[in-house]
Length: 167
Image 1 (cartoon, rainbow, N blue to C red):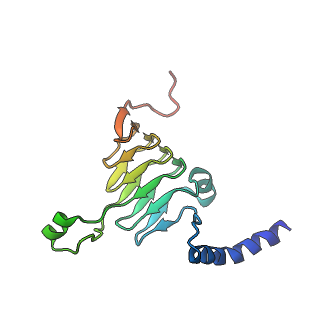
Image 2 (image 1 turned 120 degrees about the horizontal axis):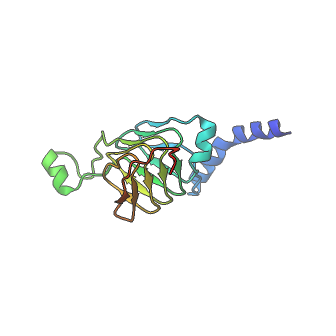
């Protein structure tokens, strides 16, 4: 019975997504990139299912996103690879208004924790074992072993704490 149910879900899931989209109903697609660039998750799919909630949004419109092994996300985290050009930037570069530049990659290291509703805006690198507090807006690189929190993503602690260290 379990096998039949899995097959039925696999066959009907694409149709449910299409119907939901037609009726403007939000259906979260787990661990899926929204954009033209690559999303690379180092964990195998079973592990990623436990570490990355369905509500995490990966926007790859302006660059690639890499997520290291054993990185855990809270609910509703947004990883955004970039931005649209404003009037001054577009005029200076001779590009159309709201052009989306490429090459704004986000690299998240291994064994990190990204708290719920945090927003990471590329280009940036989050070092191994870094922790980002809930609701933080991160626009600059985060060093390894750092704890970053508050809406302005201030570094709270950057002590190099080795994993499995005895205190």
